[in-house]
Amino acid sequence: MSQTVDRALSILPLLAEGPADLGRVADRLGVHKSTALRLLRTLHDHGFVYRQADQRYRLGARLISLAQEAMENLDVREIAHPHLVRLNEQVGHTVHLAVHEEDEVLYIDKVESRYPVRMYSRIGKPVAITVAAVAKLLLADLPENERRAVAEQLDYPMYTARSTPNADGFLKELAKVREQGWATDLGGHEESINCVAAPIRGADGRVVAAMSVSAPNVVVTADELLTLLPLVRRTADAISGEYSGRTPVKEVTA
Amino acid sequence: MSQTVDRALSILPLLAEGPADLGRVADRLGVHKSTALRLLRTLHDHGFVYRQADQRYRLGARLISLAQEAMENLDVREIAHPHLVRLNEQVGHTVHLAVHEEDEVLYIDKVESRYPVRMYSRIGKPVAITVAAVAKLLLADLPENERRAVAEQLDYPMYTARSTPNADGFLKELAKVREQGWATDLGGHEESINCVAAPIRGADGRVVAAMSVSAPNVVVTADELLTLLPLVRRTADAISGEYSGRTPVKEVTA
DNA sequence: CCGTTCCGTTGCAAATCTTGCAACAGGCGT
DNA sequence: ACGCCTGTTGCAAGATTTGCAACGGAACGG
Image (cartoon, rainbow over all chains, first blue to last red; front, side, top):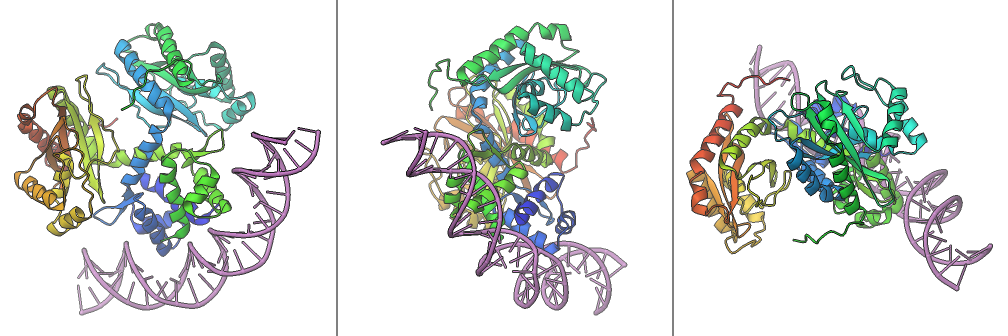
């Protein structure tokens, strides 16, 4: 809506691809070099971009520290963390926490597997929304019409043969997940990796986040992983209880 | 330099403090509500801010994922990580990696202590620049005049009795650090926590990053921690070698 | 149940702020 | 030294942004 700001913000994702010099930025934006320069300067003054030795621009430190603050303000995360750690200590596998926002689902916390074989994922990374167990839980909770709207406009990449192929299949899966109150991803994202996930609910019963335990086939079979479901659900419920204020929590003030 | 962009960007740190409604944003920016609205809308379109159920604005997911990409592009981090993990396995204490950018020094990686007692820090957090061992190394490498300029404009908060009190003391400390090629922080930030740090250098010999090992008094005394110095330096040197391309690294392509 | 108040939202005209141009400066390689 | 490439600045034209004022809707209280 605001042209200038719009252009300035468009520079950031562009720089995320890698450092770029003035000319390149101007070209990609479709504006005159002098214009790009002035936008970059403003971004620089705010620390959002950084100029490296060879004069090219990179994303700046301010962005990183801001994002960090943004995550800390998500209080589900704060409450959930100790529970995730405890669960990880019990089962040993990778534990994730994810939230839904706008059209993305993203990991906001993660406790690494203690096994040498780890899966690739990272905090802040948008998840494969059509297949990830946590994504299914988060989307399954949307009202009927929104669910349909979202499903329609998604892409359905076939990561593996077991990936959700299209909107129809996805909506069916969501219905099932909604019904049973938990979700799985059995090799839908990466052939050899399975996940079990459970929802975390706020006081009003709406799903505010979802957590999952993931492990590769080589460590435990899908069946074995499923035996952890009750534990995962109990953990999620415990977090829900605390988050919605039902469970009194002992003060942890500094 | 660009008023519109300047205002828009100023909104972000403001929201980092916590969610705010339109009126509040407009006030803090010193502009009319309608203006603030339009800026927020633009930020929203780019996913930088998010509107929660109660209509208030929060920092958005895009910010988080962008920051994540920004960090991945820092290739020192990628190279250093396995070394940090290995060092952590050997010594058990918390290991940090930090870089200097503009007027900040910030942690870009961290491997947690295996001991139950942990120190508070987080990736992306600006470090206590006047006392942290890594900060000293990073600043000590600047040319004389820049070092002086930076030192003059810093604040010198007395976190503890052993904190660096003023610019003079800081410059002396930097000179010493520069001379000896390593640095410590013995209770300068938190009474009971000590750190040993070593620099990571690029091909041209300039310090591009710094790493440290930190541990609380209750686990090891400062003297004991100092015995780890050779190991820390060797690790830092190994990273330097790889980063500057001196050490051939085996391809780790996916 | 209606009047009041508080927010967010929109159309509009004034003018501020942004834009692209053209010219300049500095570094680099031929 | 000369041309070439990239980043930088002053300026005038005009598009974009701004604040205002008025509207709509929700929440509140009498």
